[in-house]
Length: 61
Image (cartoon, rainbow, N blue to C red; front, side, top):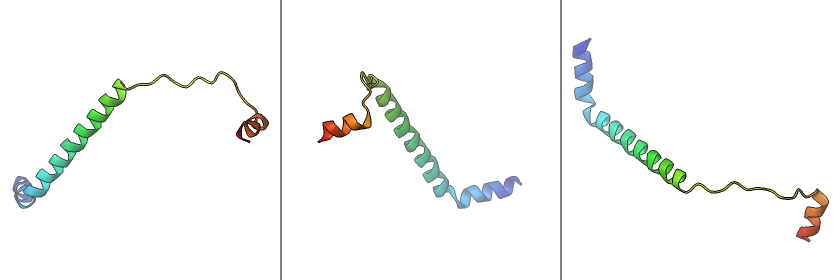
């Protein structure tokens, strides 16, 4: 079993490195985006008045 694994790793070494690199870059990008989103949190929208469909149409005209 171990020789098969060693052979597989030897044959696919560069592909395995590319996969690891891709996972690291994507994880890093996600974490940076997550941190930036946390830093730029905005206040939620608060609706002070609820309009009916007729009132909305009047405002748009």
